[in-house]
Image (cartoon, rainbow, N blue to C red; front, side, top):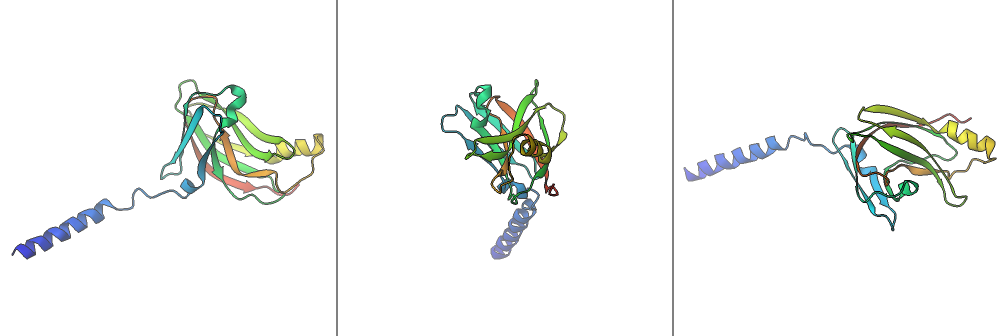
Length: 182
């Protein structure tokens, strides 16, 4: 009788554990694509966490950097860029900060020529879909500055520079789409 009760209890406990682990808290594939980068002399910190719906929570802590040092704390989304290709980045972003926050995104980084390109915008508490078409920005530099296309112009990650303001904001990547060649 004791053996029968023990077996029933073991089965009940096993079923309870299986019921609790229903897979409802699955990891979103984007979790592996988000990361952070901190400059060695930074007083700001940044952390990221990705929810099962793909929303990345970005928390900037420590001490805020001066406006010109916004790049010292970075949240970044990785992807594999193709040579000589511009992209359209589409993402949803917002903050719960009462006064909103300015944000700078960098998509181009050329340390050899000391060229860095991106886009600055303002977040408020409205979930907004943003579309960044880099062909417009790059066309200006190709025509006005005499650039030539090279394969190393894109970072391989979309960087959200955020060291200048403490607080929390949210980003959900929607797509990164190669644009047709000009």
